[in-house]
Image 1 (cartoon, rainbow, N blue to C red):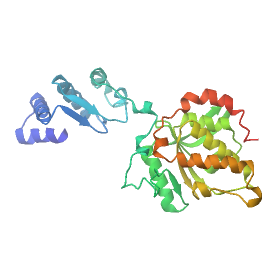
Image 2: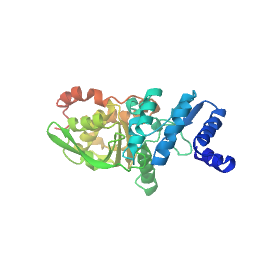
Image 3: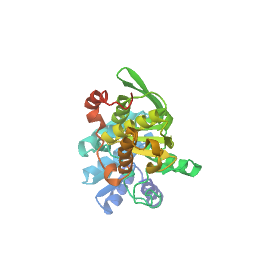
Image 4: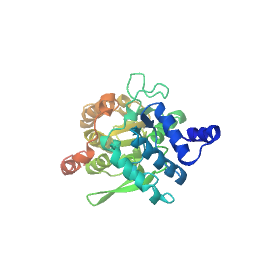
Length: 306
């Protein structure tokens, strides 16, 4: 649009309504379906220009398709002289069908195949499980977190209230419903199924870093990890992990203890961790916010935290 306006000014010496009409006619000559990607309004000049352009385009039968990080009602929010822009918002909401992707509860960026970004591992599963503690692995983990949170500019800590207790979330994007923890944040302290279910209810995507190999003598850590995975799995949370080792090597057990309860329970956990990397699982609708009330009541029956 800016290029068309500049051309109309410099080449045709047009101003005012003649300028706008020329830009509209030029745009419509290429087609009546007009698509805008990452639509945003950042200053008053653009706001007033868009108001005139869109009004004229819609009046002449154009079809507007746009993607944006904000719903129409939040465009140019807090901007200078925004009251002059409000009639345009009313026009958008009246003429356009607004589809909220937040209501889908699924981030399609986690399931799209992207060879350039190396998003699939050698087995063909989506790369949401990063193995290794080296700098390159952690950078890939960080890159995915920043991509899904749009650069991470709104990341803050927060506290969840769970049955009168506080669950601390060290890094969270409330706008995108994404949280980030270390293994120690979740499993190195006393925590119960209700705590993990609350996390699964609040966030549709959870990043967990610095997940270690677990030994049999670390039974409390093992039990908490089992409970955590169960809670996130039941709520269809999308789980992104940076770990020391692969799921099948995560829990080390000696021969004397190979028949203990935790070994059998961890077999299910390992299976779920593998499934949670699959495209089929990643396409599932997040159900945490629908299940929390029932699941928190059932959480008291889970005995892993004893």
